Image 1 (cartoon, one colour):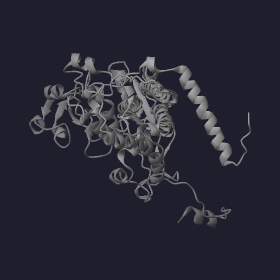
Image 2 (spheres, one colour):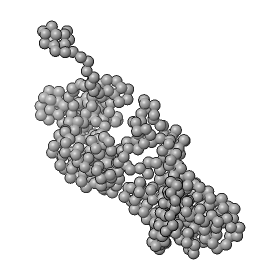
Image 3 (cartoon, one colour):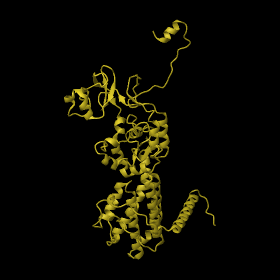
Length: 471
């Protein structure tokens, strides 16, 4: 008999109707889930809460709100559930007495061997996993009875949180551990990690060493489909990496990631990739192709003297041409800006600076300098134009090589390796470009910026069919 039928028979039922309510389902297969109460093992966190918060405040969080999110979790967290009802996994080193139910935590394999009263020969030579470790029995220190390992396995985040200590020989080689600990930088998607990986790292490092396990945390949001919907294989909108790499290109994909605010969700797809290709990769390749085509036609080669493989672009070329001096000033300006941005883990500012420079290089410098390259005679001015553009392409290539390693490698192999016998095998073996402060002419840059703004406004008025008024 259902509840509603029983109430109806007693004339206590007012009304029966179907009610749609929220119910948990599996995110992958959409099967309805069943809540089941079970006993698990926990670590009491109240005594650790504020100690972990003190350690957390010593870390640089990017974006900065990551610190507030982590502290909020720590303020409101409950005890940490560390066990799961599964057969295979991290064997928790907890033994419980068959007689008095007292439990003990075993510190390491040596302690377990010393305490073992049964089953060591079954476990010896195996990794600490079921069923072998379950054979080991130890003696209870309280009642003398036998103690058996619990059947639960450990939460995977226990393993994830102990990585700085387990991989750097914390106990076996403290000197080696101190050489490499803590990590300079970690990166992970923000959603979920404040209560998972970040939390596990911070909690275990606080207990073991009372120090931050990493110095800087770079977090980012979630990847979504271009239409803003979650990207899942079951939804049919997931893009496999190999497919994306073939269709959009790895460099385009990397630039798309880098040219994005990490705290915002990234809408990923082929239309976005086409926009990046149009805005960044095609202008870069067009300038490179322009230089190579005319340099081959004129059989121009860079100077062979004073070549330094660390800096294959050479020193800033000397030129009397105003355009050359301007583009060299802009180049060194973005070298300084990009270097500062990347040192502060700000790839968005870095890529925006490069895109603005590419626009200047392609739409201003190359367009205004084409007649210099078209001349039949390789005079001093034409040679200065070649030297300037060669220097710019190599230095720019080195600047963006960490983000776009493949196209810059192709450029380097042709521009440097093919003409310089002592050039390093790869652009990634060269030294980071250095800003030549003497080449930055502030007045020239300001004048060029005003000219660019005027031209941009003129084009806007022209597109809108607004008459150009005399000044």
